[in-house]
Amino acid sequence: MDQRKSRDVQEAARRFAETLADSYRIVYGQAAESGERQQRLAREFSDLVQSNLREQAEGGRAAAQQFTEQAGRQREAGQAFARESMEAYADFLNATFSRYQAGTEQATGAAREGLRNLSDTTTGLVGTATGAASSAVGATADATRSAADTATFPIPGYDEMNVDEISDRVSSLSAEQVQRLKDYEQQNENRQSLIERFDSRIRAASE
Image (cartoon, rainbow, N blue to C red; front, side, top):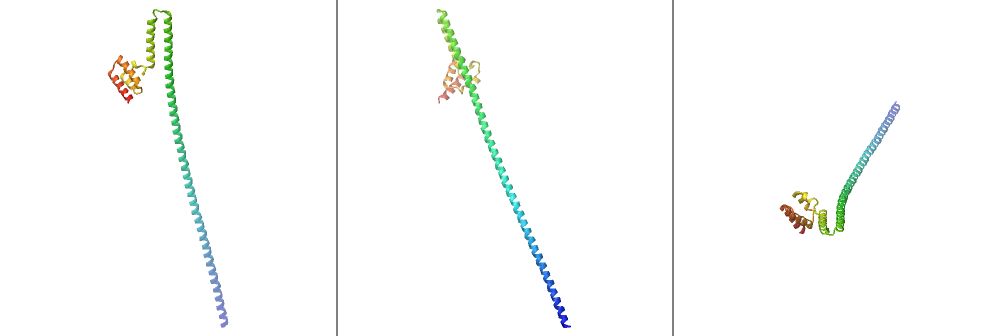
């Protein structure tokens, strides 16, 4: 009887030990599985964070590069506009100077042609009548001087201008040209306001 109870106790102890061992194995297995799952989740989270950081860094580099390229295009556009503006202004000045030079040459050519015509007329008159040659030559010489004076007068159309119009053109003339205007004015209209303006310009040019 005692032996049977002893065997029963031993059997119960053995089953308890096996059950306890199975429980420990289950707990350890679950713990290991949980640890692996946590490690896997930790790796996935780390990979996700690194991926986001890389995407943000790449986005920042792309935005910085785009901004740099845009700034470069704006700088190039500004430089091109400045060059085009300078070239257009230079072309305008060249065209203006060319028209002025052409007009001056045309006026000079017309004056020379007039002098040649007058000279030819004078020669013909001298050959036609010896008695009238002296007076004709004198009249022709006067006409020649008048034509030359008109062609080279500092301000064309001077007699048709008023005081303000003449005064506006004096500042661009030399002292010799202004002195010529002064002499002409004193011999004709003799307007004191103009003569004072001429004197002021002559003094300024001589300083």
